Length: 278
Image (tube, rainbow, N blue to C red; front, side, top):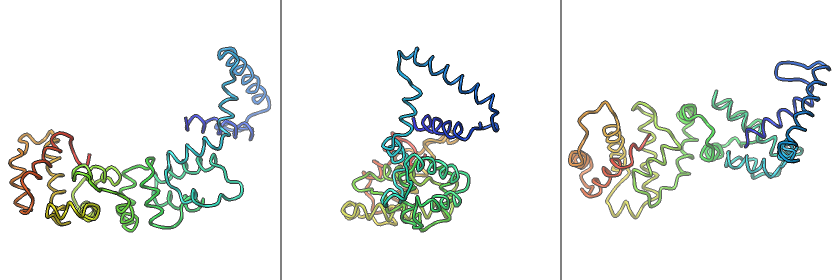
């Protein structure tokens, strides 16, 4: 729907300016285009029983409430949403800028963020950038991973936006990696992510941590165990899959205070649901 309206608005701009994407039109070409549009419009009216689809879409393209809904459903948080709109503001124009900024981010993250700031869409604040990332699904995850690796201040605020209260550990880890994609190889960045997740998970579940006798360090060990188990059970290259008994033995050897039943439930979750970082 949003892309269809974008094309209608773009066509309006092109017709008003008197050129096409291939170049400027001659007067004869403009007259032919106008005649063709009239013919197509009449045909649409006949086909639709008198309903003028073109003008209906044209009206929708100028509907500010519709554009506002499209903006907020695609980009859930922008600093400009909470400000008094500047002179000449329209959600249709904002949609175009958000779309352009997202495309720019997916090519060069730093330039994309700078674009949003230059248009007044985002404030120059790690927390505001983190909220924008958390509520947006149009950003390329590979570019986003590079950006967060470079902007640890934004990463810190992004982690605190997650609420893992009363979530089972593997499910919380899946949710975490849906927003902050894990790197393809083990390294310092993955260790940083797991460390931040472990502290956040414990902060969200203080009663559970006391009940199970878990610390952030113990959760860190469990997270690595879950990732390794996920690879073992899902990889076609691993022929001899780890058994539940082996996982319990290996995990309790690394974190001795964890109950056997709890570790067994962790194994069952990966076996039934799948990889925690897929």
